[in-house]
Image 1: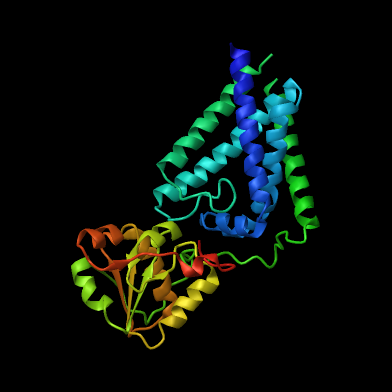
Image 2 (image 1 turned 180 degrees about the horizontal axis):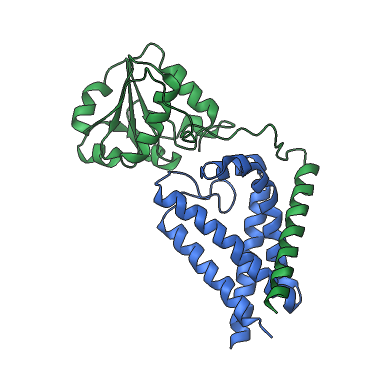
Length: 135
Length: 177
């Protein structure tokens, strides 16, 4: 049961990260602008925009096809990335900054409470994979 | 055990990051780090307000409508493009928080020869952010800057004039979406 759940979560979260990474790769400069709009550390936005799409593809791909030990590491990496995303989204949400999420590249829709809830659910999925893939 | 797991996770993140930088460098449309200019309509908060600029006023929709109809007034809508397209104050320009530096400069240019700027958003606070930035950029003591209290929802509830349609500026390169 735990294995089946871990498999479903791995394929779901891995697939989602691959799609998100691929969409973000399409327009890197526009994606950098989306990140800068969060007004957290605008100076690092272009570097994050350059790194993040491929990082999502690597972590998502590892979740789907890597051996168990590396799948677990990928889930931990995904958890860290999702924690950073959730912090950024929560920060924009509670500061009432009216911006697009940028979660799936440009045009991902505005940040709402649902965006925040979705990120928390994804974090829970990543944490479940880390726990379920043990041993 | 956890150290091994953490080490592998760090390896994956470092490998992904290095690959990301390499892919970006190889792409003709990749980000050129030294040339990237972040959007600034909302400001970054580090710039001091222009000393001569008049303070931002917050007015109820019924009070703000008296200045909206004036040809010397510029109205700016800071909501996202889809909300702007569904309906906006007649004659308003679209200038969301995420606008490019060029769009913000263009808005300031359009203020030349006008005496009033009216800004509204989903509520009061989102409009204030953009109003403060335009106030700082404009730096004019003779420019009255008004924020509509309660935003477009309050404006609509009061039954005041609005219009609908696509945002003409939204498709332009570097334009706000």
